[in-house]
Image 1 (cartoon, helix red, strand yellow):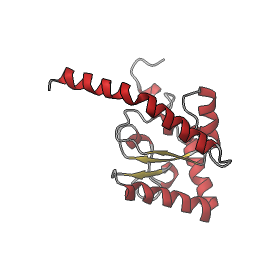
Image 2 (cartoon, helix red, strand yellow):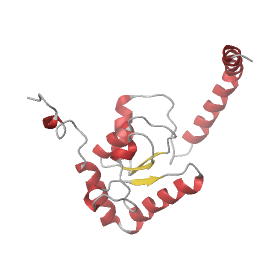
Image 3 (cartoon, helix red, strand yellow):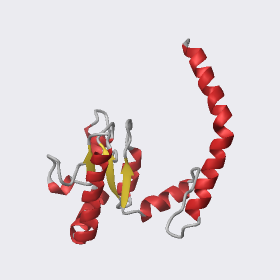
Length: 163
């Protein structure tokens, strides 16, 4: 099978199941939204995204590939603690509270390295334990998130020819 035949076959399969998939997604949304403690929103609205970032205590980003890690950066500006897989840009911006060579004042989240359930469960359980058992320390972590500066204000002056 050639590459184009494979893609064509995949697209045909996707088109054939899309109706059934949409019904399943709608049924899942209806089921979850019937619960007062849960809501599923399908789609993207900028205003809603910012409300979610601002209202969350934790943001979980288990990405296999993440070129820039923008979601954790946005979340940290709102004081939402990221729990991320060490990949892409998140390696340079999220520093594990428990396991990092960075000074405590720069530690701003939880990082896991492997792609299995155990890895994410470990990071998430540490984050939730801090949140529930040591709220004062959790608030310090939130402050570290808010104070993290990934703007161009710091590196800009070091760029040759910067005014």
